[in-house]
Image 1 (cartoon, rainbow, N blue to C red):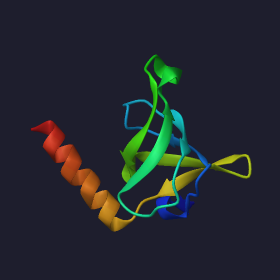
Image 2 (tube, rainbow, N blue to C red):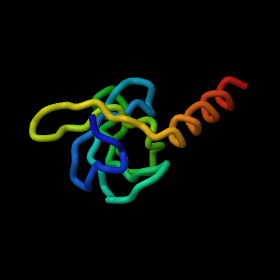
Image 3 (cartoon, rainbow, N blue to C red):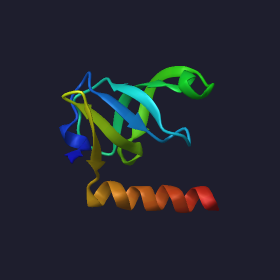
Length: 89
């Protein structure tokens, strides 16, 4: 496993912020609740775009040509619960 804070700029990731997993390229070396990603929405008929996504939406990272699962911090999981709760209202 890898944490979102360990994912470096240029790493290929899979994220779920569009509802379906899509590929993206990490565009920063920051740590925290949000990361800058070049998201390949065209994989599911949407647009490719670069922007900030929640770290808890990053689910896989490609390391040494192998996909590995991403582990989230307690703070990131708490934010996910809050966002999910607000979305359901």
